[in-house]
Image (cartoon, rainbow, N blue to C red; front, side, top):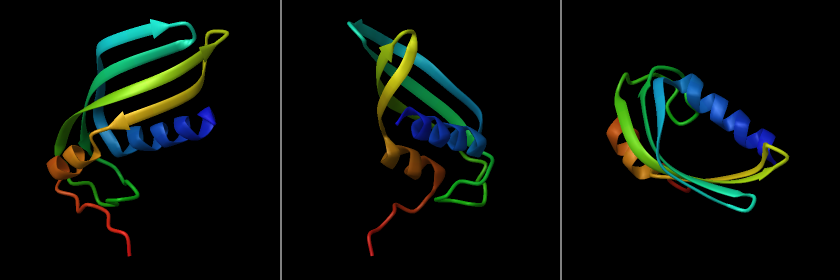
Length: 97
């Protein structure tokens, strides 16, 4: 459901000030658009994995695969370098207990 993805995206933006998404590559075929992005931000707000801001900066690569119908994104899948982001921010890697 795209709404859930956008809600998660809004929460990320609230946690990371000075956030920029720089497209490096865009590929479109039919109703599919793939974007390779460089995402950079500073941890300035609460995040579920780290409620207290660290003030640290991160820069990672993400790949977004979007399905577009009638000019709107109806499906969004994303792959992100979460480990790289966690290491740059000094966060502990989540464990399964």
